[in-house]
Length: 311
Image 1: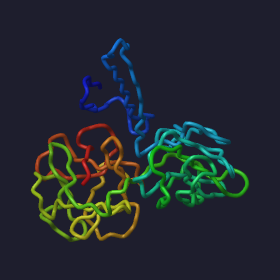
Image 2: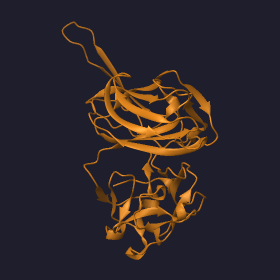
Image 3: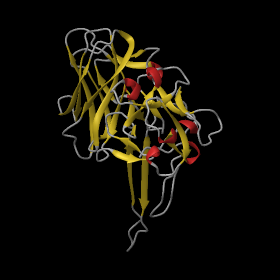
Image 4: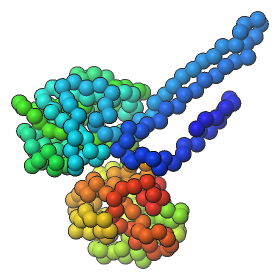
């Protein structure tokens, strides 16, 4: 997309050709030419800025030391950064981290496990956070690990993920994401397909209450809080995958908050909201999305019924 003139709006377009695991990011390229004056020719200035998504596949690194890209059927996008040993690292440039507060990585390990250090500027640069990468029981068995971030630098930097541990292969890294600071818990509607809102059926508070879409009305049944711990809360309870299921069509419901993976949700840069435990997305069911359409779990795709605007 493009615009001309001294001011303008760049309207981003929906992309139906790539899934969330593709190496896609934004580039803003600007050029200005003045009119010249007093016998001087016109001058042209040019600048370019890369906008990184909050969610990245680890194998899409800008630079690396010691690691290899490995194929794994259970990995998102089919690949991981593997053969990780103590002191290895991967880097991404540029990244703006000032307004981020949490880092989450999807890892697997049939080795010895270890830690991931999140650093800025160099492999020995400012330490922003450290997260343990435990043994998961197999190279195809993945889990999410999360840490809070401190000392985030202002402006643009190079992001380094530095791997530490004992001898031999430590763990694999599939993907990672950052949570952006929002000034604490943010209450408001979660808007979806047909401009309808995520809604708790009849404002019920019993465990197992149906979650649906409904015409937006500003009620408490449509007021969700994003507290920054990976949950979505309404009426004092959490958005929950029934039974911790992973199958397409699994019911999404309201349930007492319990800290399990069934209640973790990660907004993605493509507008979907993913449950990392199942690697599936929050989905308005069916093909006609009227008031009362239930919400369930479904394989992630690019359809409008999986696009959500968070508060």
